[in-house]
Image (cartoon, rainbow, N blue to C red; front, side, top):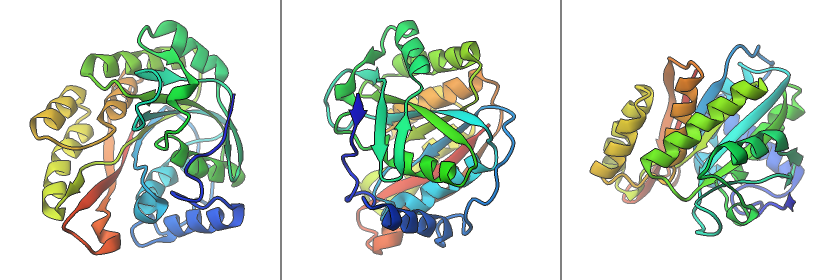
Length: 284
């Protein structure tokens, strides 16, 4: 299947040159890393990031922190495993797919072999295009990857995993199988967990709640992430993708984690009465 973008022109520009200008704005913004990716790094081990998925004007500079770190730690052919929440309610509870996704920067090919192995080895994961048809949480990550590719930093394929089911056991199962397949196929991988944090809380409430789950992520404590999201009623849409990413990264040997940047929509709109939280984190 060839999937066309569904939020180009809304969450990010649909035209090539406007999108390039926006991506560069995200990197150079005071809330971003303040510099463009300039050189490829050297891939030594898997890398995981937490990345937001709102409109680029709100969360793009935060996301740029994670992609800047990716650029410094990769080279050659990379498979990006991108896990995102299913906001639409369409399709299976957890699903991947095969084929191609179009972006304003050009086509992104799915690592079909990796996707097929996930499907065969994970009982709760389906091969279902409908789960991805209208969902934005994975789509908004792709222009950042294509931009790195255009800078000759690496060559990417990706594997989309849409998660409507976010119970703890399912997330752990998905993370376990991602790590297993990555080892079996000897892939160089990055794992991207797409999520926003608290939704429509005051700045003070959102920052306080988000700090709890960010601490859990930094401690690589996948069980506490789930417990605290439930206990503290944290309206984090992609906690399941984060849990799966943390589990996979730990299985692949990750021991360190960093908070790269935290911000809210209020830092853009200057309305702090109802904000959405965004964070960029690195695990390796």
